[in-house]
Amino acid sequence: MAKKKILTIGFDLSSEDTQFSEFDSDLSLLDWDIILFKPDIMDYIYRPESTFQGKPCLSDDKSFKLKAQTEHWRREIKSAVESGKLVIAYLSELIELSIATGEKNFSGTGRNQKTTRLVDNYNNFASIPSNMKPVKTKGQEIKLAANNTELISTYWQEFSSYSSYKVLLTEELPACLVTKHGEKTVGAILRSKHSSGALLLLPDIDFYSDEFFDENGGWTKKAEQFSAKLINTVVSIDKALRNLDELTPEPEWAKEQSYKLKEENSALVKLLQVESKLEKAQVEKEIILEQIKDLGRLRNLLFEKGKPLEYAILDALKIIGFDVSQFNDGKSEFDAVFQSKEGRLIGEAEGKDNKAVNIDKLRQLALNIHEDLERDDIESPAKAVLFGNSYRLIPVEERDEPFTTKCMSAASTSSTALVFTPDLFNVAQYLSNNKDARFATKCRKVLFTSIGRVQFPPIPQ
Image (tube, rainbow, N blue to C red; front, side, top):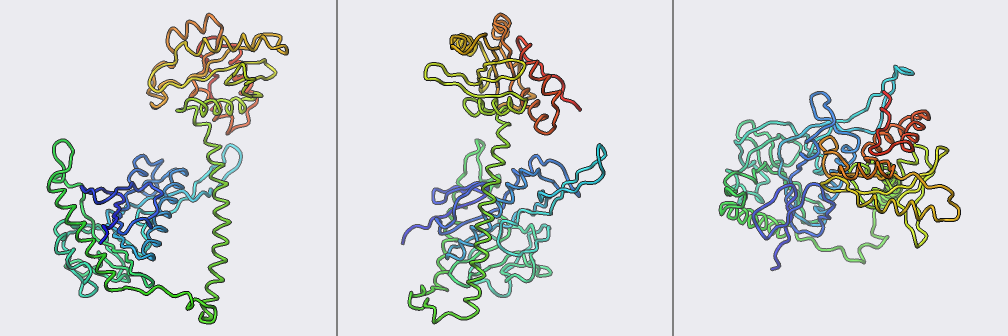
């Protein structure tokens, strides 16, 4: 018999017989036979934008990403179960939070106008396709339910000592595990009506127990033994599912229109209508995603290098009020050529991972100025500007001086302006959000008159 393909999501096992996936993944579950799932969203709430009613409240961006990711897993888990797969969801701690709806309320007028973001309640169990109605609690006293336990009796014998419940589930679910006192549902089995697949909702297990790691952070023998036992047990559950419900694939002749029910045809029409709406929504979603990517490109000034940095610089210069372009005639190539009524400038861009920008690009910039002046249509030398994004992978507030002492000295000699691209971002961000022609003019003039590090005018409050 072929070895089962087993995927763990949100936690790892000490075994070469399983593959691990982060919660943030676009994997299709149809490539796997057995899926072990844990709804771990801690990365999303590590640095929440704020709190609302005592719960973490995510930014618009994180809200969109979390909702898209949970919808991905909800869809994939449902599809996997309907395709005959075994999915086991370990019910870890219920994490409740608030996410942005994308809607806002406005009150007041003029300077007194107040904007309120509208938010919805959300939790990590939204990624599991079941109406669990979870209630947050904790406990370890668990027993098998009176019925519906044939699939997990062996599992529970092996792993009851490792398990603890973190939530109570609605009594509407087909319980397989209950609390010893009060018989509240803490585990359930949801069988597919159309395949041998099933979704098992089971109490949590600490897969990263201290006894599973040595002093160097490696897996211990106990971890390997635990993983092997878990794999053997879930494979046995999968085999039992298939033996209990071995469905016969519907033959083609049985799909003929003459055998279909009237209500079935009506349901198919509704399905087509829903799929049409989904298709339109998906197209709209893709358009908005592209808009978000384009609008967010300005942030490349904070951390990028190469072409992405160059394009972000061009975007920022347009916002400030320059006519911008890149120049390449086969002989000369300039990162940025930009002009306004104040004059004409040529720029070079340089990004450094973990050090300051040095004089290398100044040589190239000086050569560009001379090559540009040699063109027949150019009467006077352009102003030289070096755009530098030094220490680009470090938070901006923690970075050292962006240009070396030698670079600063050489810039003074050549009358070159040195622009730290995060400074340019601050200016462009403000002007993108506010129509302020006077401030934009001040910024353009500063670029023309500066020698050495450019100090843009303070952002208006």
